[in-house]
Length: 198
Image (cartoon, rainbow, N blue to C red; front, side, top):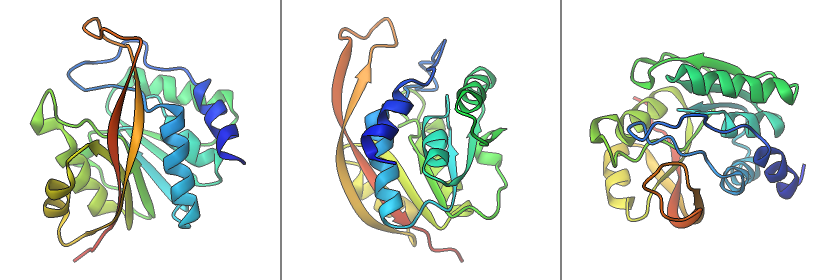
């Protein structure tokens, strides 16, 4: 499958019906999802993939379309129902689990691919919990964060190692009343991390 084909398929997925501002529920744009998944495929990291905080399933479904065994984890039951519908419409077998990432127990995960909440609204529910769990359950992580997060990420994940950092344009669609533009493009950083387990 070509990257543009994947992007087109992901663009057609149903999004959040009632996104939560507190949970920072922004859909991962299809262009960004396709970029991450193709980078992971080039590095042979798409074996068994887990999308932590999968929302409506964009990354998990994209991974399944690329041939991965995909698992999506989400605490919001409405978002999870949407994710399941999205996978069913495409005839995909994605294992969706309703769980709090902080209490998640999974084995056999090669790679976590995630767009975690950045902690802009609630630091305690931000990316730290997602990074901690990702390191515990996987060998590799592809994760999106605010620009300028490198020092924090590097320190927080030690002894795991940041292998690569990519700056990616993230077209943020209007989804909350306070958004003034239909689309605002922000720069985010994609981190590829190799986990070191004790």
